Length: 149
Image (cartoon, rainbow, N blue to C red; front, side, top):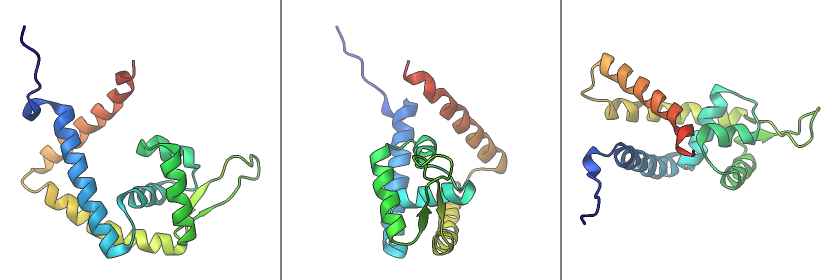
């Protein structure tokens, strides 16, 4: 009986994982060198720039990260002065997080480089193809919840 073997070039999860890993490793090295932050800090900053103040649980939910690494990362970012974490007046367990002024300025420096990296990645794709790719990725992300079943 022959065993099954994945054709990794035609296996969507393998291709997505490879792409995501290469993007994350490259971003981490570049951002650490130029700005003193890693890719996790950048992901948190970009989320906080889009919607803040938010609790750490929301960061975990959106970024798909575990509570422990997010908590440690936020503590380091708070110590560096990039975020502020304040207890909620109505619920002491809830601690909304937001960028500080210096954190926002750092975000604004990094985003320029991030957008340039995205443009290089998308080179060769027509505007309609870019839109289609983003639509497909959004639909795939919506399917993630079914994988746990």
